[in-house]
Image (cartoon, rainbow, N blue to C red; front, top):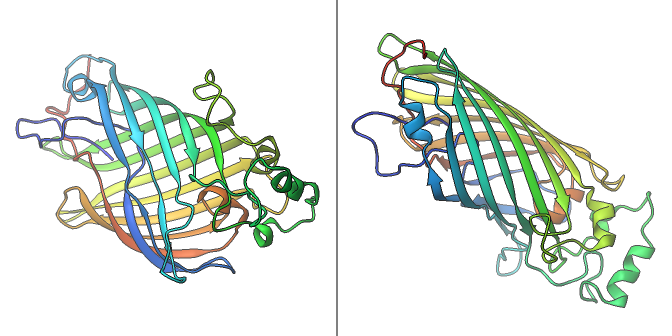
Length: 316
């Protein structure tokens, strides 16, 4: 993802170097219990303050900052009676990013985001008969051992998933320009750490986790991402690899997830088509206990238009 700095900017002014891309997809590959009809993540960013575009347009090395709210819901339609959307994911973050441009017009960005992650359900995670937090719901955890297959026990209709979450991310982007200062090749490297915690923003006592659940979730996740962006004639394309490593979860849950993705933007604008192959734990609230490969195809869009730095020169 990269932004634009020139005289004919689009109406969308904010730029976020570290961001989640929205998408709508279908595909093949499912867990043994459900069949996915489509998967959608309509991510939006609401800027509170953002001078990143202004900072990148200056001749001197000037830090740029963004403060924002990001809503990152994820919805899945399953092929069942009435084709319900079950246990949708809701993520909401308050975030801050700072970007610095190097002397060679490469970018270094740090992001800090904190918020909430849940699925809006009230049922016990491993019982369809009881509500979350009741004696009956809590009793279901007593029968769980390291050998228990949690995917087989999961309450997939109303099982509650809830935690507060904080993320810290670093991104380094190498920009290669052509003779007219247009970035034609971009290498992007991202490292992120995610922590599940009980207090909202580390302070407020709401939105946290059930103590029985956090022992199953695990609290720590490390994410590594590489992306290459280039051009085929006038069409922009991206090739991306993401690896997620989750620590401390129940032994029946896989500890890793891999996503390999190709995206093409035929008209070199925000709208693109993608294909993705993923395997490892499922990234959909409590369905992280599932483990299956999936091939997805769909559409995606980038809220932040590609940028051209006004002049390709060594910054002072």
